[in-house]
Image (cartoon, rainbow, N blue to C red; front, side, top):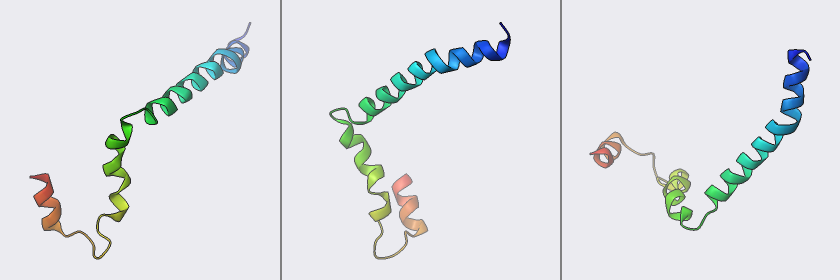
Length: 64
């Protein structure tokens, strides 16, 4: 069997199954109980400075 056919059969069967299981695992990991606290801060990034842009002094104060 030539290499292309072997890799094509592998991709059509086992790799498809592996990628599907990986996708389901990622979805379960993101929506697990307790994950909302982890993602709460990044979810609010667009709404942090609604009145004015963040200044350099604010960014430096948060890093220190």
